Length: 502
Image (cartoon, rainbow, N blue to C red; front, side):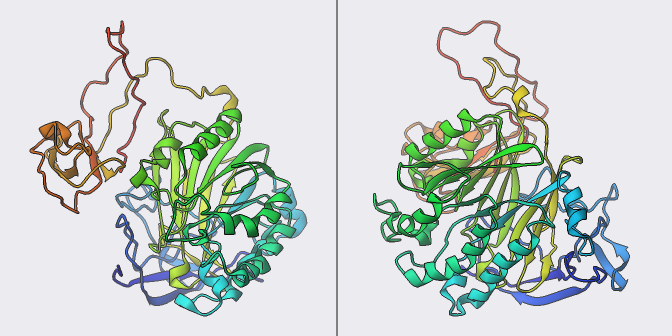
């Protein structure tokens, strides 16, 4: 559906522009924002963004001079949005390089920072017919920008999240894609690409055995000459891939997973992650929820792998959102979506890793418009442990103390139906949840209600509860201790949880 138009404010300060002195707020007016599957909010009337190590600016007396910075309690900018960056406040944004810096100066700081660039869906741009305001020159501008900023930003990897083209059988769209991609490839920067739903051979048969034939026909020559490609699955095909890259002495792997993966694909990806537990892992998947109707839970799967610190996706014209989930060791995984094609402004996302500060800064920039988007869902920071993973265990101990949830966690989950009823959590909050696909055979126990009091399971479909589950907060309850002796029946170990999983 189509949601309300949201005014957005951008800052047109460019670290590579000559002079590096001006800050200008550019209000683009109303941009249509199509609705998002999970109704993630977008921020309207965003403040001019944080630049040059300063807080976001609400009011400027002159270009580059901020008279009223955006402040909150504690003196830092923050936004309290549910489902967004729950464990990260919006911190100062730091531009990666001053344009006045010479290449020698950039080289001297190369060990202190590096950048990973995310290319969202290019499908509309390679059509080159103005659909949704997108044109080919915008994609070429993105590729040219990567080439130009390779050294200034110390770009260590480029990741394309899929929907490379609009229709995978059209050779001219692939030709247009390679007009930009050939430039990226020529830099020698390690790269990863995954297929999206528009890269299917037939979108009418999204799970057919030949679904990636067109994608592989055009992408196989590129993958075969990728020097950083470590593996691909199935053999001879490239819808699943692993790419290695190193930056500032840190080893990384990008695990590309096909849209709506088979269990065999996830098992293969697990084998790669388990084989290289010391490499920090980014999961590249076009859209995490695709396949949930078949019981595929990519986020849940990722939580079992300690080296995964980020899941990146595109696909959704909600444009962008980010949230933190936690792995089975209670450590953060950044789950991020970025897809700007439907607004026709050709933004891309990049992350600058500050090694000595153990911090990553996220930026959203349009090379064709030459502006940053600086609302808190476009520019933020998160902590990242740059230390050695080799000292950390990758499997949970036999007995693990359960960390209590601090909020109720109401979310869409696989294997939950549309029959159901109400679940009341200990704090009195009530949630309309589905049944466990058992036809209410177990009465209240059939509800997807964890830690709460389930009500009647109603044998009537309700679209508002279809697929919805709640895990109630356990804050204030005593933390369970390891069992002194196992009971006669088999026991399961519950992973530590530090936040609600929505």
